[in-house]
Structure formats: C-alpha cells, structure tokens
Length: 228
Image 1 (cartoon, helix red, strand yellow):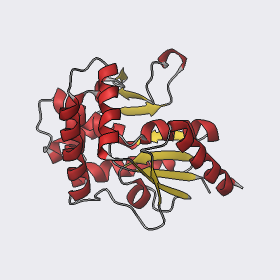
Image 2 (tube, rainbow, N blue to C red):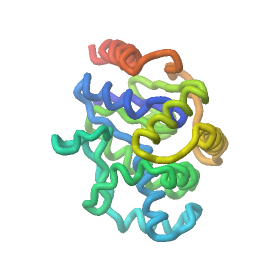
Image 3 (cartoon, helix red, strand yellow):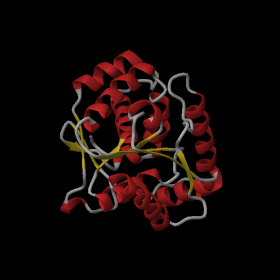
C-alpha cells in the first residue's frame, strides 16, 4: 500500500516548501494541489472569464492539458514544482497576485473541486506521495498514513508572503498582503464545499517560531516510523 503524507493548512503557512523538502528527503513524489487551482484561475484570466464561471471552467479544464512534475536541472530557479499548461511553462505565471486572488475563488466552485480532486486521487492511487493543499487530509486522501495541519499566525504568514512577492519584483505593501490573506482565509474556511479544517487525528504543527529545517526534520522523523 502506498505511503501517503497529507498536508493541509492556510495560505503562506509554508506548506509548499516543507512538503517539497519532505518529499525529497523521503524519496516521495511531491504534489502541489494548489497549483491546479491556480492554473484554473489562470485559464479564467486568459479567457476573460469571471472566476465564478463554474460550468465553463470545468469545460476548459477538460480541454486544456495540465502537467506537473519535479523541476528539471535547467529549472532550478526557486520553483517548488514545474507546471505546464498545454506544454507551456506556467510555473511562475500562476504565482502572480492576480492568479492568487482568483485561485481561492475558483476553489470554492463545487464542480471545479470535484474535477480536480479526482485528478489528484488518480495521481496518488499507486505511488507514495507528499500532497499538500486545503482539503487533502479529509477529502483527497482521507486514509493518509500521516495527516498534518501546518499553520502559523496571520502576521507571520503575511510577512512570509510579502517577502516572497518582493523577491519576485511585485510591488505590493505589507498591509495589502495582510488584508488579502485575511480574505482568503475567510473564503477557505467558510466555503460551502470542503472548507479548510483541522480533522480528527491530524497533527497540528504551528510553524510561527520554527525554521523550515526544523519543521521538515519533525515531519521526516515521524514519517520514518510509519515506513518502518
């Protein structure tokens, strides 16, 4: 039976970086489910569609080819994963603020979630994975060997997100980032379908006062006991 490590948590809690490093340390496949919702938002923007266009977005998702893989040797530019949209590298375009704001909106659409959850489950069906997102522990991989809820204070997450955007040359204030995080948290936690939540049996790991290395070490240590 495959080893599945499921990581949920709010935006900018460090899920992507931590999940990628844990996967590297344990030799597992890293799957960033949030990137799939970001690609959906990008598709909406490219087609001048409102983010609420549920049926049309599902139709476009079926028409467009989305691929995800570990970065190759020529792609070591800080990305956590390589995302291709119809063969085009969209790894950085899906990280822009416009796409970020749209991703939690399209993620609230039931038919979009249903379509992408099925894709995510297919990926993990026959292989070991570290999968991160907002609904992995209870919706995508409810029978995971290790369920983690990675979190941090809103201020800590806003500082991380602001620094990340600045390093990419995006002109945005800390106050704007903080407000956006609050709004995205509210949407994620109160959406009608599969809201962000801490499930029974999940390991709640607050990263506010921990380094990335410390968080990764803690998870790897616990995961190794599961592998025997």
